[in-house]
Length: 238
Image (cartoon, rainbow, N blue to C red):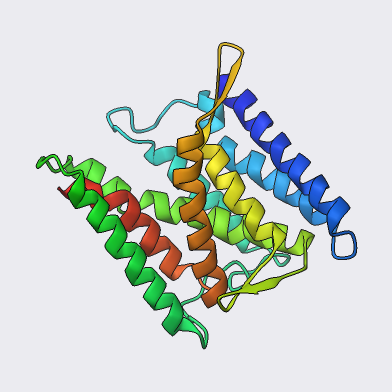
């Protein structure tokens, strides 16, 4: 039940921030898409946690949540295939758009930073093959397809206004996805107590905004997925 309550709190925060945005950005707000975003988050968390840990793990010998990640990816792909969403509108395209050069510079800077951080904290003991395989694939595929894919589309449709930030059209919906990404990593609920680790929130929320910038600059999830997996995977090699 702890995970279910945590998810309800997280989704409630998203709803509250959404209603705040609706009050500020009245002219461009569409409430149906905000409701869709809330439903998407609940469904995503249910898949990721295998029914809030009520469904037995089909890979009991694994050290990582392969089943939950694969279920979440599958669910996200199904949503992307719906006419209201669509593959390309969700960023499932290799086309990087006309402004890909600046995005590539940002991607290279992020990749360099992630490898530098991994080397600076290296313990000289590479992780297991399973950990390496998981961290170089699942986090980027699962989280980018959802947060910078379907969820971003829903929230961008809920809040239509945009401003250009270094050539990337960023709106309130994009900001919400970054905040939610930080919250979902930092928020915990146990024994009736709610905790939000501010360091974890900052360490995940800020990179989420940079990944959002890559996504909006290129219109594609390709660079965000790769950058995300480098962030998770680099430390497993050293």
